[in-house]
Each structure stands twice: as C-alpha cells, then as structure tokens.
Image: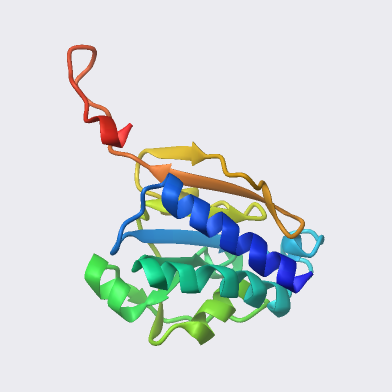
Length: 183
C-alpha cells in the first residue's frame, strides 16, 4: 500500500504543478491526514509510514522544479506550517517555536521537519497553490482567489484530495480587460 501511496502522490503533484502553472520560487501548501490515507478517520490513526510514502512521492518533484513547500500541521498546533528557514525569510514569514510530532502536528509535518535542511514553523502564509489530502482544510493558507483544480485522481491511498490554484482578483467591472493567462 505504501508504494501505491507514493506513486499516487507523485502523479498528483506533477499534475497539480502543471495545472496551477507553478514556477521556480512559487510556494505550495500541503495538508495531509495520514490517518485518512490508510482508511481511518482524520486524527485517529496517524501513520508515519503513509506520511513518508506520500512525502517521498511529492518532495523530490517540488525540489526538481524549485517550488517551495509549506506543510500544514494539524489543529493541535493551530495549523501552523513547516517550511525551510530560507522560505520563511524570503517571504517575510515570522518564525514561531514549535516542532511537530505525530500526535501534535501530524505525521506528514513530522516527516517534513525531518526531511528539510533547516525546518522552522510559521503561523501564516499565502501559497500560490495547495493540495489537501484527507480534508485538512488548507484554504486559509492560499492567496486570494482560490480556484478548484480537478486532476485525474481524486484520492491518495484512501484519502480524498482537493486541489486549488490561485489567480489575481478580477477588478474593474464589465468594461475592464483582463490578462488571459490569469483566468
């Protein structure tokens, strides 16, 4: 099952990068319930194995594209985010003092903390796109305006996924002209 989770996560992240038109330097947020991936209810059966499998399918692809990753912690850490220290500095995000663990932060955030070179936690970000694995509610961490993205898969493991990209707000009303690439 873990190899399947890794492969599904890899496919999903590649499709999301393309659909959201992510570029080098962009920020992507991921919230992930390892419990949901293995068929349990969110927050009830944290699985480091499942988190590591999904992370191993996702993170190398993001690194290859130069896309920064923010991993959302669970509600026990107020949905703080784990990022590389360089990412926090580049975007001007204030660093807070907390370290995730499987039962307080979640297995996916714990996995990111272990994998990142210089992990830190921040409370607020505005990502260009996001991947929600298992109903973790990442919307608060997206730039305005979030647009749903449909991919060829709707699950990773047994967890439902929802994806979003963002676009600039349309302003100006009916007489305004808009830039086609942002629609």
